[in-house]
Structure formats: structure tokens, C-alpha cells
Image (cartoon, rainbow, N blue to C red; front, side, top):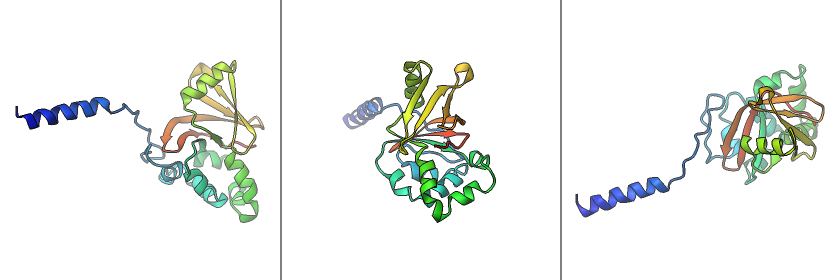
Length: 184
């Protein structure tokens, strides 16, 4: 083997050995989620989050959620928004309701990056529940789902949402897809 080929082979093997093993992000809404992109850059590609993306735009939160963060976002699906009383979403995205919409959306955002492993550790430390302060200012409570598989998020009104897809890593935080809309 020539010295050049030997150096190339050695360089490649060392380079691959030094590369960190990254867990592959799950697909969300039929779209790949790239850990090199921001929360907004990924969310716009999920066909399950078109209502959330429209709401984020209407609330003027695109720049915030595209910023450095880090953020943990509990992201309701279109089906979650569809469970709200008829006309709720249409009313919330009206300009005169921007403050209320912003309050609801920022209630789904927690400063910092909390993976499901981090959240489970906090639940364990908290004796079965963890309280997280949202960007909106009010708390969310996280508990383990029945049977110990998965996480449930409870809002200030006692409504619950289950994390259906966890640990969608972003360049500026993490998304946990949920099946309900949380209300402050």
C-alpha cells in the first residue's frame, strides 16, 4: 500500500472514530427534522403542524423561535388544535387577539433544552412530577404516563397532553410533539 493510501485510510478511520454518534431525529408530519435547523425551519415542513406554524406567524414569534434559544417546545399537532371548541383557532389568529394567542403559544415554550431523559429525571427528583416555568411565566407540570412509558404535560387548568414524539432535536433546542393544546 502506498504511503498516500495508508495516510488516507488512517485519516478516514481516525475521522470516523472521532465523529460523535448522533441519534437520528424522528420524522414529524412526514418530514425529516434536521438538528442543524431551528425550531421554525423544521416546523414549517411538518404537515402535522400547519396550524401551529400559522399561529406562530400570527403572534409574531417567528424571530424569537428562530433565535439562539435554547428552547424546549411542546408542539401541539393540527389534531390537537382541532379538539378546541369550533372557531377558537380562527378567533385567536385575528390581530385583535394577538396578546392572547402569544400567551397561549409562549405557554408551550420552556427556556432551556429538556430532553425526555432530562424531564424523566426531573419527575423522579420531584417525587412523581416536575414543574417547569414557561416563557409565558406560568408553570406546566410534567409527569410520567400511566405504565411509566412516556410523558404527560398538565396545564394550569388541569388539561393534559401526552408527548407523542419526543426529542426532536433542533439547533436552538428540542421539540416534543403533544396531542393537546395547553392553556395558561
